Length: 341
Image 1: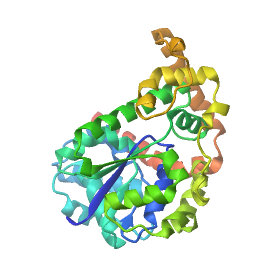
Image 2: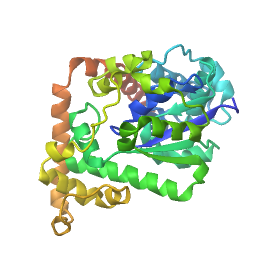
Image 3: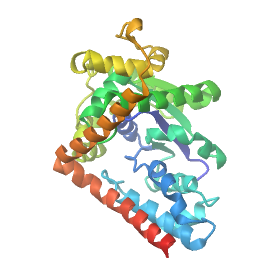
Image 4: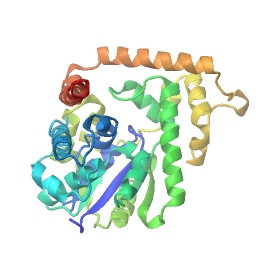
């Protein structure tokens, strides 16, 4: 498995990462599955498992992670997860190793030499990668945060109040920009969503050169692939991957966010927007730090909006996500019973 190359897409969701993923997945040498967000979901659960040096705890964790993958809203086509084989190939007792081995063995099964993960929150787990000697190539995909915020307001996932969305986006971009400053340039490629949709062939050729594959025109016909079809069917927020590139899908925030919302976003994340070359709308004199009382109000409203959104979300979207959520809840309940006993 040492010859298999890892690629990690970083940034913030709702930035075109599924578009990029299905484009890359058209390549014979690339395995780019829809992510079950292994690290993001299981790192908080690790204390429930106890010592991973314990054989039973270790095998239980591997089984649970594999179940998460099996229950993914978008199926990993033609992949069989052999839990014993995964255990044999792990070099250390670590969730990061399970993550690595699952992707490498799956890539092998489909004859690929590159695996791509698009759990963009993995930008916050770089130290964990380094700790077990995983050194992926990083593709930093950024999009104007105000359009990201608009997209999150309509999606079943993520925060819903503009302040909370801006805070998450700001933290993600700051981490990506920090990594860019400190990593060998050979391991880092930065890409703007706006450039990807305006000149996809140009940007895809750059990405192919970066990861070491030959560009082909079929990457632009991603929307005809089975992976795009399955992804689109798995949720309303991914429906666009079944269409050709939407070249005008930018700057929508100018018409659909209020000036007050734009001001909130730019107050929180103006520094990162400017660093990435996005022009601010709010006059400098109108950008003032929020008080603790204002922030509390924003966060309370965010919780209310998230609850309301889930109640109103399309039934098919909720049904697709329920199996994974039930699994994670059952793990919490099972582990709590163990600690109580």
